[in-house]
Each structure stands twice: as C-alpha cells, then as structure tokens.
Image (cartoon, rainbow, N blue to C red):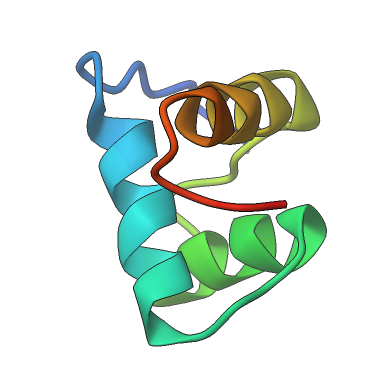
Length: 65
C-alpha cells in the first residue's frame, strides 16, 4: 500500500509544532517524530516542510533555536 499525501490547511503545521514544543523542548527531528506518534502515523512531516516552518516560527519570535 502506498502512502497517501495529506495537504494540511495553512498554519496547521505551525500549530502542531507549537503544541509539540509546548509539551517539552525538542530538536526538529524529535518534533517530527512526536507529531507522527501522536497522529498514529497518519502525519509524517518531511524535512522540506518541517524546517521552513521552524524557521518561520523562530523569525516570528514564537520559538527559540
């Protein structure tokens, strides 16, 4: 069975990241793994989506590196 790609509405990934980081500070890879875990493997965040979102949140002052 092939994995089906899910396009999230704008801002959803940012909220998932913020929620994950609110639980405990983590590095990027751990954030991706945690989102995958809490979604029961439904959401698999690729680096090409994750890191631009992390940089965007950092630029806005919502997270710190």
